[in-house]
Length: 194
Ligand code: 5GP
Image 1 (cartoon, rainbow, N blue to C red):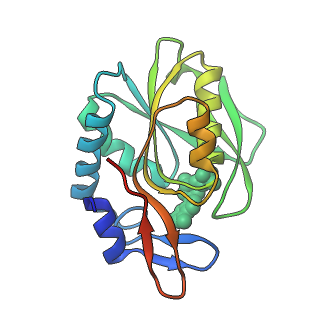
Image 2 (spheres, rainbow, N blue to C red):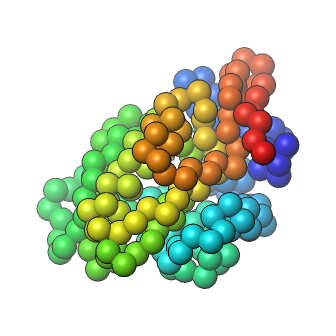
C-alpha cells in the first residue's frame, strides 16, 4: 500500500451511497505533507511531459493542485462553479453534474488564463463518474490547449469515470484506486498498481 492508501484505510470513512469520506486529511482538513508526497509522485508519473499549467476545479481540488504545482513550478488555474448564466467577460464554460451534490453547475474559466500554447495537467481529489473531469477536458479543448494528463488522488474504480477517461486516450494517474468498499464493515480494497 502507498502512503495515500494507508491513510485512507486509517482515516477514511465509508458512507452509504458509495461515498468515501476523507475530510480529515484530504478535502476539508488538509494534510499538506501528504499533498507534498502526492505532488512528488505525480511529478514522477508525468516526467517528460511539457506541462506549463495545472487546472483544477473548486473547491476541494484547489489545495491539492497548489501543492502539486510546486513540484512542477507552474501556475494553477481553478474552474469556478457558477449557477448564473450571466457570465461576465470572455469565459470558457462547461456543464458539470455533481456526484456528491446531485446538481448541475456551469464551470467557467476566463479565456485569458488558458490558450492554445498551454500544456495542461488536470488535478482533482476524486474521480467517480467522470463528469467533473469531462467538463475540465472540454474547457481545455475549447481553449485549443493540450491535456497532457490527469492526476487524481482517489479514483473509485467501481464507477465508470476511470474507464471513460482512459478510453479517451488520456494518461490518467490515480494514486489510490478503490476497487470496492463496504459501508457496513468499513472495508476498503484497492486495485493493485505497479
Ligand atoms: P465525478 O464528476 O467524477 O462523478 O465526481 C467527482 C467529484 O465528486 C469530485 O470532485 C468530488 O468532489 C466528488 N466526489 C465523488 N465521489 C466522492 C466521494 O466518494 N467522496 C467525496 N468526498 N467526494 C466525492
